[in-house]
Image 1 (cartoon, helix red, strand yellow):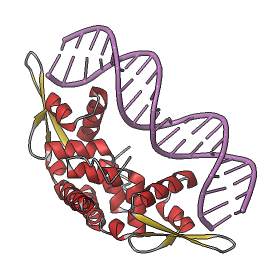
Image 2 (tube, each protein chain N blue to C red):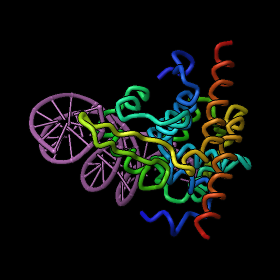
Image 3 (tube, rainbow over the protein chains, first blue to last red):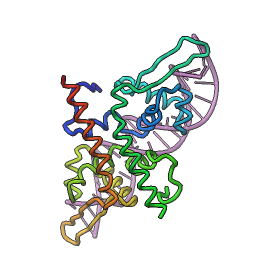
Image 4 (cartoon, helix red, strand yellow):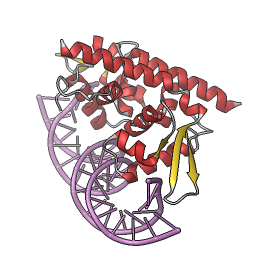
Amino acid sequence: MNITNELPACPVETTLMLIGDKWKVLILRDLLPGTKRFGELKKSIGNVSQKVLTAQLRDMEEKGLVSREVFAEVPPRVEYSLTELGQSLKPILDAMSHWGEAYKAKKIV
Amino acid sequence: MNITNELPACPVETTLMLIGDKWKVLILRDLLPGTKRFGELKKSIGNVSQKVLTAQLRDMEEKGLVSREVFAEVPPRVEYSLTELGQSLKPILDAMSHWGEAYKAKKIV
DNA sequence: CAGAATCCAATATGATACTG
DNA sequence: CAGTATCATATTGGATTCTG
């Protein structure tokens, strides 16, 4: 799918095209504070298989949300961080976080 | 899954539990302006099968985001609208919409 | 019209083993 | 460590048919 052309008319759908699934939102959340290695990311996200995490990261890299840096070391080290575009999604994550807090607070009553 | 207990520690995940997929976001977007009948909703969302739309609406109803009103008429009429809780998600949709606009503007350059 | 039910295709995810 | 490859399973979605 070409992301530079044929964007949906609705801006919400445009956003969904880039982060319209659970995993990407979680990756975003965990990279927002800063760079992480693959293994750290895997652990902080919780229940992701290596396969899924790898695929999602590749996808986000392709979409320009994440950048990947490989270090020529043994054992290998690969660090992931958000691009400027990826960081620009923070307000959405903040809104989600805020709502989640409020929801939890109400439910506990 | 019980939504009143055992919420994830992370508020973002809490939010994902309730609207963590494409369809629910689109339903939210289309009900935010006001009540809609099933058929209208189906048309405004675009590419949803009846089956999927029905399932998603039931799920959102169960989670307290959507309310469903059946009119005892022939042919039947069923109207869907957002509950207060559903409407409280508006800021998230707004953030997504805003980001989508900005993204599109950049890409057109 | 709104939907339930059924069958089938497509996709997503998990588990495991292997490698530079 | 950070993958890739493969197989098996689970979940999701589409198409169709039937009904109050």
